[in-house]
Image 1 (cartoon, rainbow, N blue to C red):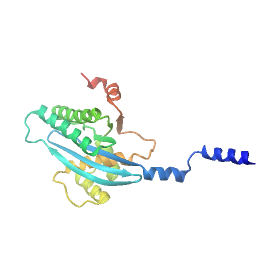
Image 2: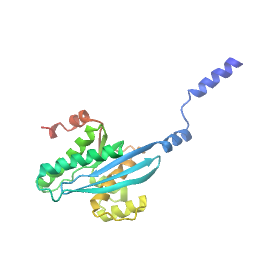
Image 3: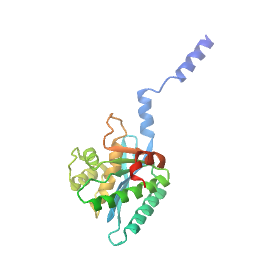
Image 4: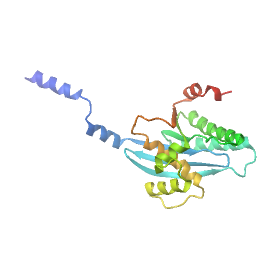
Length: 212
């Protein structure tokens, strides 16, 4: 009888956690997400802490570069600020907005460089990166992929309970990317609109044509 009881106990120990236990594990897990809306005049960013199904605001802000004339110096500023944010807040991952495709090729090129430099900064600190299309971000926050910046900002203020209005809507745009990434933690089987990179090797492999 003692042997049977011991065997039964061992079998119970090998059992998979129940749905309730899984939820408890999810609730206890914390994650810090850095969201960035890249730009060469203003870069918006937001940091949130995710604790299970709950999220709270850590900070949001902008990096102003409108007074810097040299484009390369702007890229340097983006890299340094992104590294500083990572070193100060130790985010588990970076969520970044993908450049939109417009008619002005020069603007697209500059935005692509700004995004690439921010991504390089994260990769230099071994931070996992996920890229989201602008429409995907708006859809996740407001339910409307064509929502205006003001609508996104208002929804975020209501969700995260902060009253102060940022000087630039780029700040809430950066915050929106982080919140969008948090909303994806429950898999739905749809991965359209985002790409993840865990290091330079995976990024280079998926973007061979973008590397000279």
